[in-house]
Length: 442
Image 1 (tube, rainbow, N blue to C red):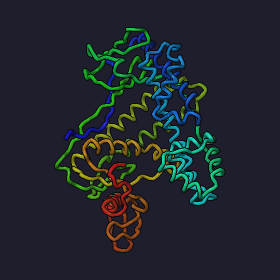
Image 2 (cartoon, one colour):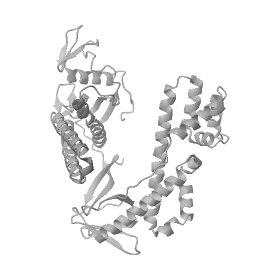
Image 3 (tube, rainbow, N blue to C red):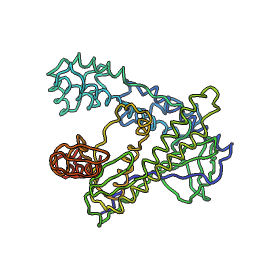
Image 4 (cartoon, rainbow, N blue to C red):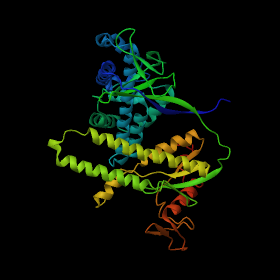
């Protein structure tokens, strides 16, 4: 059987500064790329074009006949990638709109369960959703049509359809971009050779050569990000990497995430104990720089140095996170990792400094990297319910209290480090009935 593979993004960089003339040629492609995307956003981002978004060939054909490519003098390899790039953004925007409406619907008190069931059906079935928004008769495949008739027979469809249309008008926004810092590039628009890459430009049979820091060559769709001020480019390459199957990875490990110590296991081991120091350094610097900038906003010459140092601090922090995650996997050798579902960000407390430090917590990045590394190493990642998980005693299950990083059970007298107790509860719930994602990945 072929080995399982997962997608990973790697980066390539120019070895020498890109000349001003060559950078302008690349920027010209990026500017046209932006114009095509904005045209697609404007023309196909509304409700009238919902039926054209899947699979998207109708949009492609209409864009071909529009004459826009000839107007810009844009190579087809960039023109059609810009179209499908924009279509992907539009689909994501519709997903965000539906998610927002669904969230409001769940909180709506004036609707019965039948009303909510009908609206959820419309939000889930694209053809029904499009028909209602465009005031058309809902026509679905036979099985779905029967389901629609069953749910619609119990409710006032006119009232609910008007509600759905109002919510879409209120929350759905057409996209627009001013970004000219990059573009996607298809395989036939570039060629690796001479320790670099040749990139097609708008002039026929002409390419810009950029020497690279490595000699790796790829055959896939790339994304070229431009940094004209520094005369640099960055190439993002999606590649498929083989999943490593470690036969000695047999352990089941419960972990608790923290702001100051990144990971604590149910056995009491700690990984990323310096995370708090890195994050406080990062948060304090941002807070200081923001205050300084706001005091002299009118006379400030710019923030170029600020963004450069911010990027360096983020890279330093992310490098530390990845090193500690690699160490965790090597030492724990997990077959299954149990992790708690993280709560959504909540309102801050009275201490602004602590609020700012917590706001800079890289929990989203940590979660993303854990997931990626588990997929690459064939480790199962199980998410568990987090309600009261840090307040519950891992020995007897009763609610205890936390004092200065220690957990104390008032019933059985069990005492343990707070995070270790939490990690033990995570493992117990993961091996019991607290699993949120039985399929193993979230």
